[in-house]
Length: 419
Image 1: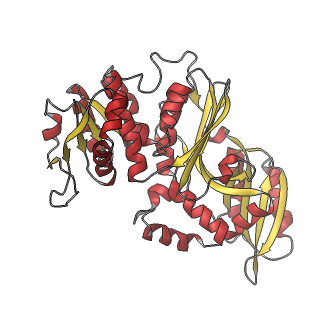
Image 2: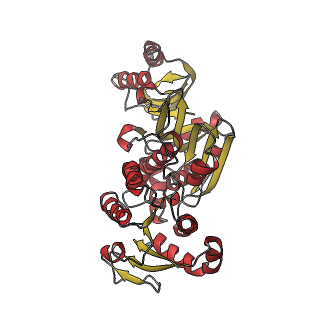
Image 3: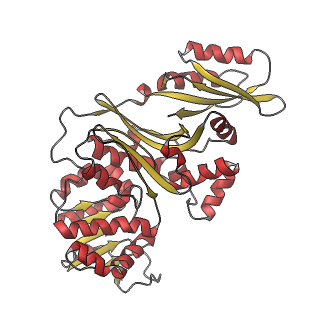
């Protein structure tokens, strides 16, 4: 009998306990041993969770319980879970977590502490999609050329509604909050940080990179408007918040931001709250993983799958996919050195000579214009909608600063990268 303790019996934790109970027979057959939840830790003991397990508000009741074999960490946050997981591992208990923020900051420390003790985290990226095992095991014979994906269902839901129904950003954000897709403070989702944490985890498995959120380019969808969506539609693009990892010689670029992506790409066709991740291997080519990226049952499904894996083997495969450091270690590409095409929306006073001065700034910064449209914004102003040929990130950023200082430019230009 394998006994489990759950740290954080909220939506996902309750679902984990329920799945282990409801599907006990098939889980036992697949694991080769019976598995049950012995106890859980919660913040509020007065809340009824409808479970017949022992509940406590003290983590020691699980960490010091010699009968508990596997600790499932679903607390959220970084600092407290880090201490709890460290103690669990040092007490010889296997760990399963869905905590992407914890892993974004402490995955290499935890790998060292875990050693051969099982530590699994499939549910930390893309909910019920088995992307961790696909990268770490199924594609282990490949050099990973790129990873590109929709890793946040809230942003994808919002961009889908804005595109299909013409809803303004503020209105759809409010709707997403009412539906429970976005928090009261939505910054973590719409600002790109949630997707960045997930991308960093995948990049460690694919490339052995120990980067932190502060080291990479992270932008959200807050500045996307209907003007941008109209431009995208006219030129055959969809706008998505994407996490992108791409190998270029011995460097890897990591970035999260809104993108214009061709409507013909499979990723562009993934709508609503669903997630989708494309992985390109040097031998297998492109593989695509699609499914629910959040939700109690979907996330719990991945957690329980990890519990079954541990019950089968009793020890961990290399947590981040490497038994030894990679030869010819890859490094993180500087943000300034990223190459891309770009789209810009520049709101200007509608008067003679403006366009010539704008194009001169482009020329001075070695940036070539591919397409340009002008759309009325108000009686006396217009939006210039411009796409570029491939340019350097540092050149685009310098150009934006120069354009913003022009006296006829009414606000900071909005820039979206084109994939």
